[in-house]
Image (cartoon, rainbow, N blue to C red; front, side, top):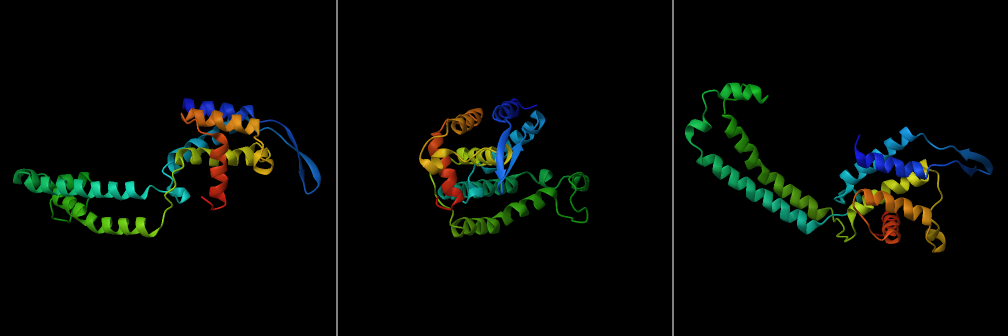
Length: 214
């Protein structure tokens, strides 16, 4: 199993304990989850890091970089089309054309050479490019400078802290005081991703995002 997942699962399990809780005035007990269940939640944190680290899921994006990267892609595609056009005819019109179509799972009734089909798809990117640029500009993504990788990990870790470990919200949200256990919990998990931010500020950014104040 992934060593990072093992490490995160161990951290979650460390803060996994029996706790007395009140629900509508009635007392109850939160029982610790199994160590195996900790692995499942550890995977969720890792997935959040992988899928949310670019910030787009949070409505945050480096718009200028995105537009620059799209222009680079368009430039590379133009070069690719030029290179295809410059290929020798024997390569562009191979004798085993239909066999290639079959192996690639393309429509065998299409008489166009494989490279010609590929080139047409590249040419069509011009239309896609214009739509993507329009989308990026019109969606009005916020150009936040906060570390989106940190936000991704904090978001999922905070959900687990409250929903799975049944811990209280950090004290400093209500009273301006740091909750040492929560701080250590977050810090330990972030370190598994080689991230060591200001935990207090990182969690405040998460709360601001939740309240649409970022």
